[in-house]
Length: 109
Image 1 (cartoon, rainbow, N blue to C red):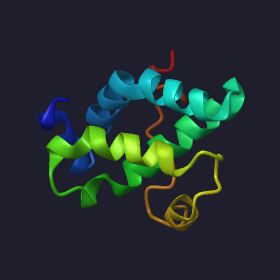
Image 2: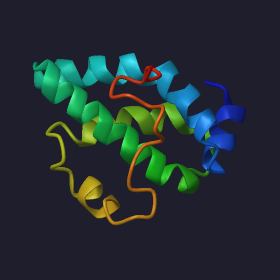
Image 3: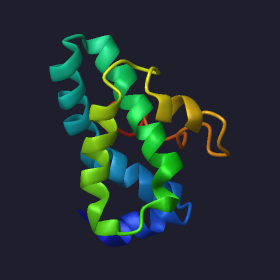
Image 4: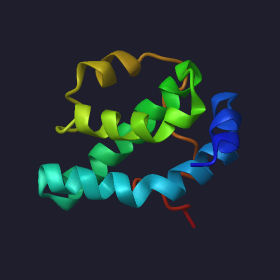
């Protein structure tokens, strides 16, 4: 993973986060789909995980641990919107994903 992109995203660079989301979106979706066995629920879980990551990214101490953070976040919320950490994060200032991030990490057209 490009730690420079992670560092820039930590500083609020939405373009850097979009690049990260594009790079990992399909993998996150695949993990969520294996857990949920439903495409729509997996897309919801992926979006929730990306939102949680976007919100918590400034607190990540080591940018090299970004991929670990991704895996732990998607596994911690197997039911979309039901993880306590996601419920708590909904009141934070970054309450939505950057506009160019879709549920599967691909750029919206």
